[in-house]
Length: 372
Image (cartoon, rainbow, N blue to C red; front, side):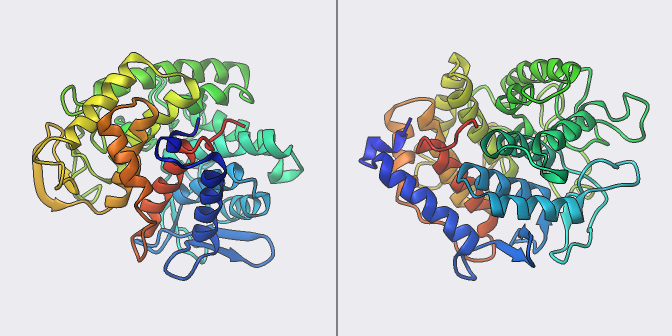
């Protein structure tokens, strides 16, 4: 469904805008693009704010490519990730290093599950849309293997730990820790993983989808609808070592902007629940409170307390807030939908994260974020 049609944007115009956004991200000017082709068959997505390549961005770029039917760029990104990021030793063997320099050297031997989650879905969609090929381009085989590792590592006697906690079926923040990140929860992906998963893994994915929808109910504040960046398994904000994870993450800040986008994508792909409608209304109503309506680009405590610090990614907030219009159709959500339509892509060093969420939001709201 094209929700942008509420403001006169036709299906054809929306598709044209999707192509324009893709071309800007991949082939725009130096202050627009963040994709770089390398040699004959490689390419990477750069986090322009941190000047590295992350599994988050690489897997996001691959999803953009499969949605836009750009197999060459998809294969370039996938080969760069497998060549430079995939770990073949240590406790995280079988996962991808979450951060690499743009020359391919690993900055870390740790893994971040949001990258693996998207890699799996990217590969499933690629196999469905383009068919499987040989080697690392046997997309479904690669997806099945990575998924099996994420679910079973450690539990099957292998070294290291799984990215999913078997007892709760929750995705962990990182394999080494027993807390989560609400924006990592992707039940709409987990249901689709079963297409290619081994039988036991498919059953686990179905349980994980149910568990993640329940987890959102725990992690999203009952009044404001806001979620924290990191949260315990009971949904309360994680208030762990600030030095270890580079500051606070128990507030509504960058990672947390993805939660409402994921809830909206789950609603579009798998059906709108009554809870999702309630959550979307609470969430967008918070931003329309008199004290926030014209002063919303801040960091917030989950109870709605506005902090003096400004948001690092305000365009991401506009884009993801607009996705509430895919769940509910009211004056508040449509106000943000209109604001999003009128907002251009971000330029400059911090454009990477904002424009990734911008593109996914536009794909979803235009009816072009599809299950392949």
